[in-house]
Image (cartoon, rainbow, N blue to C red; front, side, top):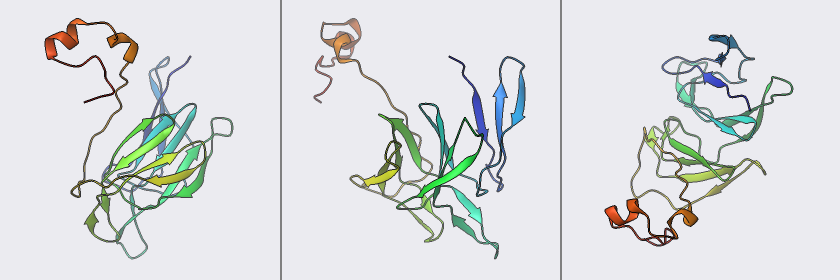
Length: 173
């Protein structure tokens, strides 16, 4: 299995540029650009596909506005395609992937000039959004990740759980 690093270049400037790092040759190569230039978006790898979600851009009047689209990169064609829109457009959100779903938390809605409490997931198999319980307070600039807990590993008494006073039934608090 080959691994590559793909960088969506946004940051503080609006960009449609996408680069791929080739570790074998220690160099960066340009990929085809995304459809809607943006910054503060999030790029995810699910199976063999890339998904670019949300972010912000600058409209014709110079205003910062949310990008509400999700773009998917096709490895076979090398092209980005807009596959759907976000229920609650935003940027600067926390996000992670679990079970083929992209979860997003909080963030900032530039169109409304407000932070978000929304929590949603995007199902990459059906290209649909579902809402979850909202955050207690609006948050931006979040970091998130997934942690896989292997139940079988803790069915027996393990040193880590004993030292930290954890239950071996990982599905209960």
